[in-house]
Image 1: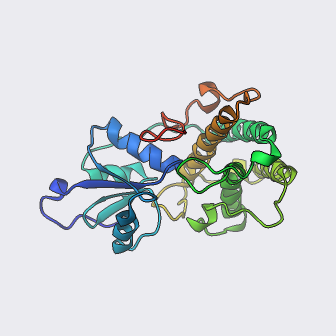
Image 2: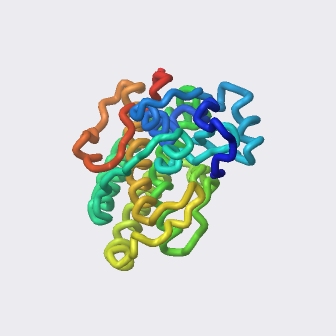
Length: 268
């Protein structure tokens, strides 16, 4: 992110660059709206100038909030508030052990729901977003897997690592479900050993900004949770009732977006 260097900074139009189905993009837009901010909404998958403007800032990712050359990654609300020009006091986060419990419930739910998607429908593409149902389910499981690679193996936490590109060997629904179950087992094994003694106030060392590891864990929880809500939407689209659907209680204490898909586009 850059510091403002132009007089009349707040008079420059505020822009939000986003794409459909992106959990952080939606949360960023809702955050600004909740704080009374007006902004130009730029869906980079529909507006060909969007990526050009991002490229001019040296960026190739979303969500981005920008005023002129001053920008912030939408995943860090205090930076978004600074660029937008208002004060934000932050929010109270759950304790790490409670976040782990939330992630467990989310992963269990995602596993149930993914198992309900008929094999022949797994490669159906989501509306307005070049991502299949199969890739969406993989993404839910991959988010905590990337977190674990980061804390266990000191792997870089990059934007690219979260693109959730399907491995060639993951060709069947059972492969996908086995992966999801393995991630959950790995999460709990880590928590019962090194996890409980981890210093969550340390620098998160992630691509999207200056945040603590506690904040990275929180984003891991609600990010997977939001996409799990989207898997439930895919089942409804297929006229399949989700098995033991997750409710607000399963996400209690997490900063979930209000909408499940987007605030500007319907899932249809």
